[in-house]
Image 1 (tube, rainbow, N blue to C red):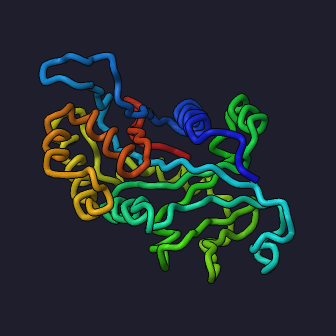
Image 2: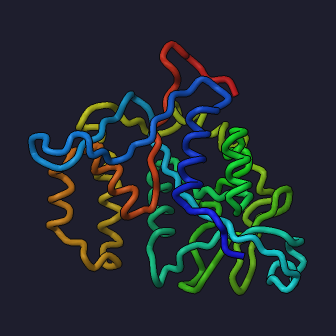
Length: 268
């Protein structure tokens, strides 16, 4: 069954829930391009990095509910119905997954995020009760690993059951989809584990160059990409460029996370 919610609605609900309902003392701020400062010297848009922290890259996916026993995973006895599929973009059409693998390998915290639901009523219930994070599943690209070919692949999961990467030869990704605490533990320690981003142009430009280096290695996929693209991006506001690079080339939203002021440690 095709999901009856939009990726934008789910992404918004998860981002707000993450920011407002973290179970520890952490500041969080999504980095989106803004129209407020259009017309500033140099032209274009501007956004700011609000505080020193580390950037979290989230790639939102929708979940397709499978209810028939004829489903591949049910036929093989991998998962009982109903379960969900999170589709990955085939590499013959998109370099998103290889680029996310490269971004994670560079030391950035990167996650696919998908819901354990697919209807507006379920999204509304999760949002109202601040349970969107709890009712979502998080995958590092490295857990999925490189795709074996350029055909269609998807990740199949059901709460409390193993997770599988499915194509012609299914492979277990991990033993359970219930990993929200592991995700929260990871971001709780992220300020000390990951490279930080500071509220100054040099720091943000350093992160931009990391993303640009990955894009450059896959630029053959972006037929419209050229030297003029890089020059234009480097001449724009660094923070705006970070948001644009993450969204346009990696399909990610960026959230800057940091301990609350006055907090020397984070207890989960």
